[in-house]
Length: 498
Image 1 (cartoon, rainbow, N blue to C red):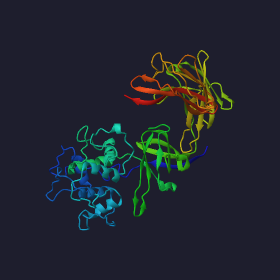
Image 2: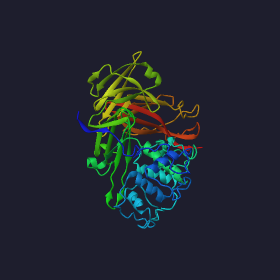
Image 3: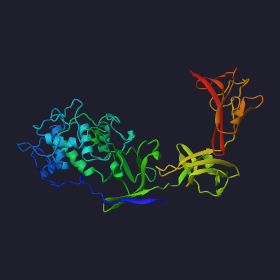
Image 4: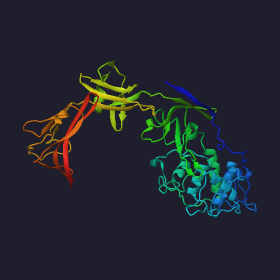
């Protein structure tokens, strides 16, 4: 197995995870910001660091709305961005004569802020809560991992709309709550006091993380990733997509956020997520270790494929009766007469699982208490862009029947006997269909993979359950995996009406 140590990262010390200077705890800076206010500590600390300032009369006016221009000036100071060599941001309402011009230009160049569709920036407009969320996420490069809709408590924050993803990011990190348990009020203005508290909270809440650039691998883009194949929860990955600009594409990157000690897996690549094996990709083990309160994260490149569970579908009662499982190749060569197995779930189904550690086709023979045996076909396909094989299983069933007088879902009217039926020519190569004399029971014996219908030409039988339907006939489906066949015969329905 090929293993290559990519990069060993020391403690991931983040520039913005701690205050840039010492804390001025307990020192009141403004007469109108008493220490009893919830934002007082943040205001005092940022003022001590010369990040924010008051008015000429020595007060801070914490209840006043903060404007978009003021927010830009504060964030530029927090990030210590160069404002001397800036490019014109191109906003028609922000000229070099504007006091916030340099700050706005610096943030626009870093793609931290943007303007409105009409070409304005609105430097004197109050900044809104939703806008501030997006600025904080971009300015502090907070992790953009997807947040499931069920984890969104805010009725006024719709997924994938405007600033919504960024609102959910800062909420998940504990930077801010909503204006109520169920509302965030994204269009409400922010006061100067609230802004100070938000900025300080963001500094302290930004998690340690490592960023992988598409350019690190000679790629233009990173278009897909998978971070949960083994030990999900050790770390979380988030994809930040670039933008097309006049200077070219800005490039994609993956943010890796350590969550707990352990080893997880990450695969990612450039190209279609639907055909990952056909494009450039990387697979790495992600080792996470905590030392003295800081994370050490190591990436280890690999081409390994891990043993993969093959789920053998059966009833819950059957899972309790499994005694032994033997495994052979599809050609009949026995690999083991006692394969290790375990109870597992696939979706809502209870199954028995065995591990497959090589690609190929296999036959698993399950022996139950009492002596009954059922065979399963197993196919393991190698997916080089992932850590596990693609597994397909098929329970062997060479014969099947359906009683149209007593089907689980639809039945013919009591006492009715179906007349003639037409079996398509050549269908016997797929399955042989017979009917039990004097009944509405049809049998199918599998021969090879395929599908066909047996039609009742003169006898569309009206039946009732929750709705009314016509039987057109019966359909036969034969699935095949190697030498294993599985046949199913069931009613072929024509029209539904109420």
